[in-house]
Structure formats: structure tokens, C-alpha cells
Image: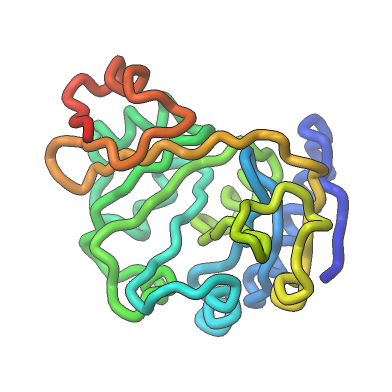
Length: 218
């Protein structure tokens, strides 16, 4: 695994340069490690079938498991979902970038089923607070991701914590230093007419209900 330092948020030219080179790697089916708000994650191109085979080696998931995606904007999902509701647009505009995952209903074929063996009926997406990652998704559209874990099952907070096995799978590691946050994402499902809280995390339910009053709690 080759490593590079993540650019500072104000280094816009450097961000674009690294984003372009990273997209080239992802388009070739390579796996990249990068830091987000609460851990390091692996990212990949969902349209690259061979890359997905390698990506699935990171964790042992069942055949029906499909990966969540990072996006630059909710409109990027139009190639994956048939429609985006006003509620979904409102949630995204209010809490993205940030630690809110939204589950969208899927009514069309998705590239390689997002890693699953059969077409999923929904997908989970969010926009993280990472300028480089947002530049990458802005260039290439939605990318799948998964949290990187230590052998003990804990989220990896520093790039040097990657196990030898993970280093063989990940071709490029983008080092953002130590990640100190332990906050988890909130997940809101919008697959039915009434949005529902699936998991409460860093974004509190009361704050979401101020935006979407019909929100159904657990």
C-alpha cells in the first residue's frame, strides 16, 4: 500500500490534483483508504465488477449485503433511484455534509447491485465532511464505502493501524492523521411514505423532527 498525506481543506488546487489521480485508480478497480469524520474507510467504484470482488475481501458479509455510498450531492443518486422525494431533498440540504445516512428506495437496476448478489430494494447514502472525498465523488458520482476495522473489530482511527491483510487489499492510503471522534451516524429510512428513524447517532432525532415533523421514531 502506498500512502500520501491528505491536503489541507484550503489547498484547493492540491485537492483537485489528488482527486483526479484517485479517481483514475478507482476507475481501474483499485481500493483506496481515506479518513472521514469518525474513522478510516475503504472506498471503491461500484461500477467496476472486478474491483468489487476485491472490495468484498475487506469484510465477511452475506451475499445479500449491499454497500452504502458517498455522494457529493443528493442529485447524484438519480442514476441509482427513480425519484428523489421532497423529504429526501430536505434532509440532505439540512444535514449534508454530516453524519446523517439516508435510506432511499430503489426502483431500477444498480451497477453490480452495490456488491450484493441480487438487486437491493434500497440504498444508503450520505455526504461526509471531507473536501477531498467530496471532490472525488463530484468527479465520478457515488462511490461505495465500508468502515475499516482492526482485528479486534474496532473502527480504525489511524492509517498505521491497518492490518497487513488490509494493506494488501488497499492500493492507496490517504493519511489524515489521527481521528479522535467516536460519534456514529444517524440513519433515517425514506423507503416508505413516512420517514423513520432506524438508528440515532450524532444527528439527534429532535433536530431532524424540526425539519421533518412527520418523522417516525423507533
